[in-house]
Image 1 (cartoon, helix red, strand yellow):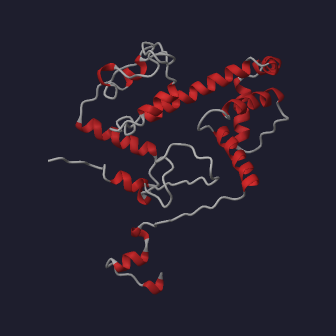
Image 2 (cartoon, rainbow, N blue to C red; image 1 turned 135 degrees about the vertical axis):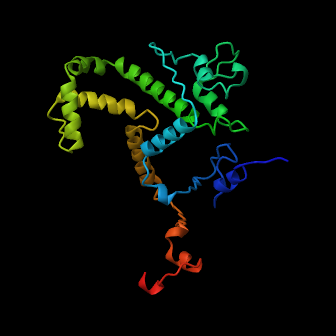
Image 3 (tube, rainbow, N blue to C red; image 1 turned 30 degrees about the vertical axis):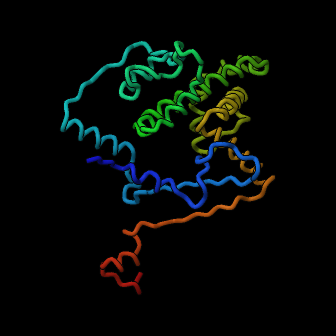
Length: 262
């Protein structure tokens, strides 16, 4: 007897009122309409639970039922550039027989890391997609590489060489003071020119790093430009409130409520 747990809900969770744009990956240039289909389920009773509380609860649960093996890390960081053994060692259950890792120099055709990760996440068995930490580890890996790459490009520019000496004069106290003022919304860029130049360089680099606050600012600017050029988008939103907080639904379910006093 074959048993499948959770697989039958996957198509229904991804269905929408508009055609799935991933069903036909071929880019179409005939229409300016961009359909966006998304659905989500929120646990309203668990919205106030923090991630630290969940982590501590699971840690306590594992310590009570299992033996804990503490494995210390090495004193030397592992090289994450062109190191095929990095992901093989982190996820031995995902890469069967120790093959298939990105950036393997023995592969006759060179494949970029981003393209290889996209290929791994499209596996039919979804073992990479459903892993608890793989997608977050590789995303952070891509973030750091983007930050280092663009920082290297900016460091070679003539205007950066002119302000590098001023940035080196900054100390930890200046940065800590600026962070405190920024938290209180009292920071002024005119108070410290060297710190202002450093923040401008960080903003330039962060705008090209996926998921960063500066990249969201850059995307917001693009959205404003698109709205100015094409007009406001049409957004259709369907909200399904939780039944346990819906008085009418509770009344029809048999709960004794005074509908006139709601």
